[in-house]
Length: 204
Image (cartoon, rainbow, N blue to C red; front, side):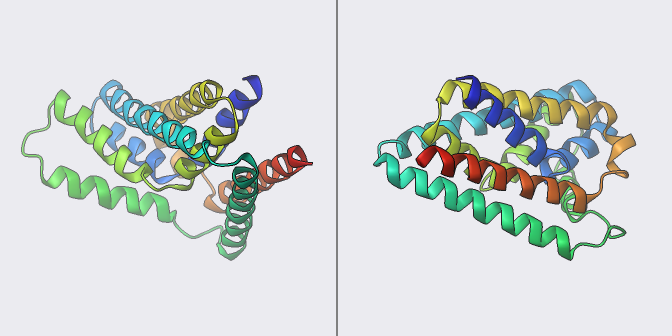
């Protein structure tokens, strides 16, 4: 269980920092009460984690060797893709994830006549949930839950999400402009490759 917890915590914390959901929380926290933004974002990420773990447990019904090969292949694919993306980035380019987050928040708020605590909470939940759907961290959580202790993966992933959300709503404005998308992407790629190596070693 400890290994599953550690894997979920590391994977989510590194992958989500500087992700679209991170910047959604940053932008919302600049405009609305931070506690409601945090509550909505964490609730959405926790719900997505639980859904991903359930999907992973369903996939665990397949033969274990198939799951092992898929796990290694996905982690390798994500790792090399992120490293390639990092190599193509310029350190001076604006963050694409940040721009997408601003557009998503603006479109959502245009539909809201009068902001309230409830609308802030629902906006944070909806925007975060939709941004996380189909994201590589969701797929990775599914894969981790299929081959590791589901309780450890769940607790680790939810804690990782909560840490990133807290950083976003508390100090997001200060660090958002200092985050290097190229560095974060490269770190994420290296982490995925490490997970692929570990998973491959466990198959032997």
